[in-house]
Image: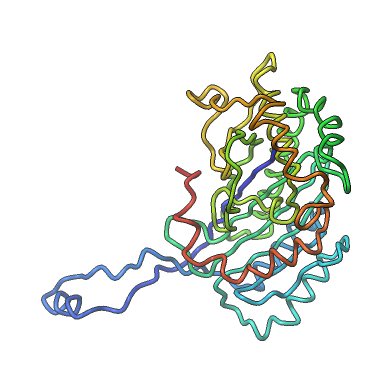
Length: 338
């Protein structure tokens, strides 16, 4: 089970025009009006304005635990040591380099984490200086987990299962998480709108997601993808597969249908519990393809590739690849807006 939210922030901008070609000039010579639009907008944003506004917004929410800041291909800040309350350090690191960066930018990513009401959340602000006309210049992507579900250091798969299985069968766990997450996403939207009065901020998604067991993802969605999960980018663990199987089995036995969105192995939404065909691949919890197979992914969190809770390495890995994440746009746009 994961928490997934997205806020679209639209700002004023100007249409990007291409240089007129030969036939455009001919058409103009005969009194025509060639269409020179490229389908892109240049946002009226400067990197400093984005960083300052985001800092103000997140500070009002108490979300001051910074993870990373990348502007274009330059990593300006990354918290390799898991220091708390270091958003001010990120702010200073940016302004030390602001003169070299200048006002214009191609892409900007700023990530912080926040713990509130039993939820562990990662908030990533993604901004582009130039973007497709039908997409926002800035989006705030929020990924999270219920803290009680988070694997503990050196916790075995069997111990993890025994600890969280009762929680997965409690419908209140889902409902409380959903209400708290909805409230948090709405407050982030309001804080961004206050800090950027010239912009329009709207919640595009705020939901509890349950992954249907089956295939194991071989490629993590890039930050530009609609299904991107910033929490997973910083806190990956093989034991989340155990959570997937237990939660998938539990939601079908609940007396009242919980309000969740079902996603596939890649994180793309495929419907709700009453969507035809969504109940396929119901696993035998202890049989092939079920929990036993999921548990074999790793005997403990400590044996995972990066280790659960090793925020420093996770931040370093996430930031090191951030320079190219905006190539090609947001994977064809925000399908969730349709």
